[in-house]
Amino acid sequence: MSTSEDRNPRRLDGIAFLSTPMRSALLRLMLSCAVLAPASPLHAAEFPSRPVRLIVPFSAGGFNDLLARLVGARLSERMKQQFIVDNRAGANTIIGTDLTAKAAPDGYTLLVIPGGHAINPSMYRKLPYDTAKDFSGVAMIGHSPYVLVVNPSLRVTSVAGLMALAKSKPRQISYASSGIGNVTHLAVELIDLMAGSQMVHVPYKGGSQLMPDLLSGTVPVAIMSFAMGFPSVKGGKLTALGVTTAKRSPVLPDLPTLSESGLPGYEVSGWYGLVAPSATPKPVLNQLNAAVRAVVSAPELGEKLAQMSVDVVDWTPAQFDRYIVAEIVKWQKVVKNLGIELQ
Image (cartoon, rainbow, N blue to C red; front, side, top):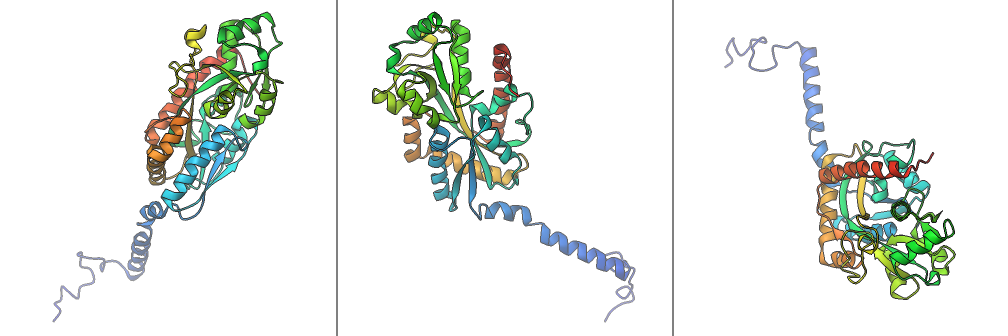
């Protein structure tokens, strides 16, 4: 039997004190909240539910492309979804980078970046994106030294020999790079600056495109990744003069550093990683980060990366973000000192 208190529509132990229209509105609001509440974790749990695009801002065949395909294949296996490489070369990585910045921030578009990603803000007066603000770090893959190589037709076998030749023939010795403002460009400019030489820059749209001219001797000098240069050095088609890092590479332990070969203090290293549009949900970034760290540290891929002289780095997205900002600051000083600026 109900009491008078039970029949009182103004009681305060529920929502009955509300008018009928207000009760209906409140119930609809509660229902909508119940439906929306699990959306965020559900999205992370279901990711990826369709193919993921890996944008490589270089032409096919170069080191970044090779790295993207190696890592992408392992991610496809681990995450049970395709990771498709999409080469968008041009404008010193700006085309592919801008495409990524403007993509939906859902984790389905990632950019494979080289160290040059942190150089462009200093090289260009205006970029169509903000390198520090428009991207979120996904995962650092690793660091790698570059190697200074020459065509045997140049008849030099040491860094000192190349510097002497370049100084005796100002603006007569040409060198190739993967693009204006690329690390492979600035690394040789730094040699010229430190040695007092003047070599002529010949830019290409990626490492694979410069190889024919380098191997023919048309453009006889280049600084390039180990992955690109080592096969030709091993086959005797190119002569390796030195590595750009502070320490020698375990892949070629007998090859000296440029610092110990007449350019004391010289140090340039390459690094590679993945970034996403900045508004990508953190659960998705963390899921991708865990997957990348797992595949690059697994024995099968880890050994291949070691053979390519890539030292794997085990960082969180936040650690990678901080590193990119530090690299931007470092290269600002170098570029300003060289006085290079592009439109």
